[in-house]
Image (cartoon, rainbow, N blue to C red; front, top):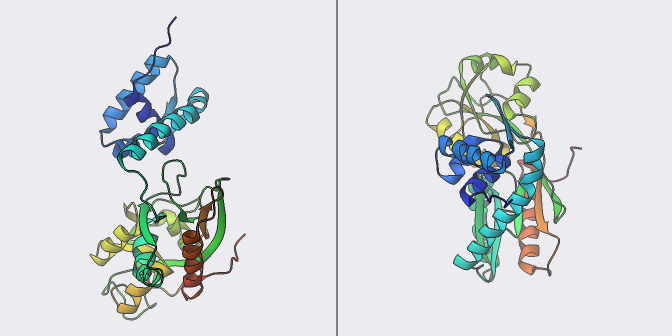
Length: 308
């Protein structure tokens, strides 16, 4: 009996749902509706004659058959994407690709990058922003900066920094001076956040440290990245939790305030990732050395690792 080959559309939907463990996120990436992704998964399961996902109201998980199927499908989907990208947009010569989260790129790197480029005028830098940890098979980069990423054996990792987290608010939110607000005020505020990095949510970490119960709080919107949280806080939509190096300029200018004195170490450290394979790239070395030196001069971070 001839093997029935699934459509590429259904396989792309499968790969995205399996990677995100979410129909909604897969739909967003593919620019289609949740219903369209669900239909493609149903079509694929009918084509192969095997259930690939276990669905419930809160999560999506691969079945054993789906987990076996996923790596091969991901590899081949990625191969098609890479081949098409090379055909449509070949790599630019002598361009250093630097990838990190939107928050790091926008709130820390971008204000400092001009200094590096002025000192290294022959190096062109392309900044790539993402909303998640390094996906080493989809994103192509020379230098990656990630918050305790899923470590990939194809890359070398160098500790970059640790820092602290604390709430920030707009001027006028029950604050007479920096660090003077009553912790009880948090119980009536909307707490704004981004999706968790690792197993510990930022708000959970900070609230428990100061003796408050996270389960009694009111949580507002969840944003893809910290720059969006920052804008919502500036517009008076709630209280955000911030990483010290990303808001030091706003705190210094008075655009944002730190209403409580308590700070908590961020749950996970940051690393810089570079490829193990390939011939040495002097531009990568120059950029990483500059990055480490800049971090060493930043008073809002710890450039010597203290966490396990």
